Image (tube, rainbow, N blue to C red; front, side, top):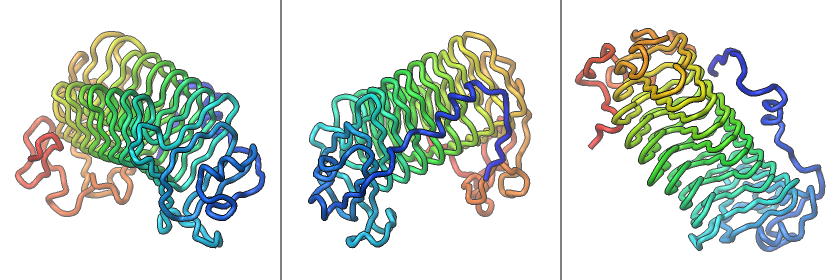
Length: 395
């Protein structure tokens, strides 16, 4: 596990605790699908406030609307004697019929979605797979959110309009959106904890946040996630923060993400944000392969590790200079808009030996296997002949 140190907080303790305690409906009866109802929509219809709907393995071709406090659990065997969402996939398939697969809405609604595959949502709005809005307190845990599309925000999931979302141990894969948040978007005064998820191969067609986007006065904790080969047309190949958010981004791995302009890994515009102990490897952007900070707000960059970021490791345009402490750079270009190596040291962190850097997980691909997986180039130099190429250089 990554050793996360405590730093001065950007978010009040009470707000942070509220992230970790996203409301769960009170314990009630359990309805079984199939059994008590033939499909998931039928189970939701029969359920009362605080009930659980347990769903057996299989493919359910339907679109759900949740307007009361419920827990939905998938991965059950057919006699409901055991549960394993990996071995017994429970699929909610939206069939691409111009609707989100799951919609949860309404002030005071508490909703848990645990152990489902959510796929083939298509919406001319927000949240192709799951749309959470208007004051809902939601928990998404252990789901696969795949192959969904939204026109505006959150190809996989969007939580908007003063919601609270805890998203943990989910897989967001191959989702797409036109504007913001290929995998997940937090929007308009939403509180979010995004912890221990995998964001892989998500796409933004027009703007920002290939994996995750946070927009407009939200408060977010982004902890221990993996962002791999996500793409944004403009800003933030892995993650973007836009307009007056408070955020802490800690202990994440971003590898091989790509943007068309600014911030191959991380992008921030007008926010108060802490980037702490993240490992950013082989991310690509024409102007900034690593981290881009734009226009007002404040930023702290503390003990991050950047390896082979294409272009500048840090680009700052306007506003106050970010605080930069203890960052480690290997084979990265100099910063622009601030002192080239401000708050950073250039050294080979010996990524092929996990004992030398406690920030790397034992299974991290950064560590590599043999010469082809190691990073031997000095800072600013071309990679060695046997070194893997940048994501953006692949043919």
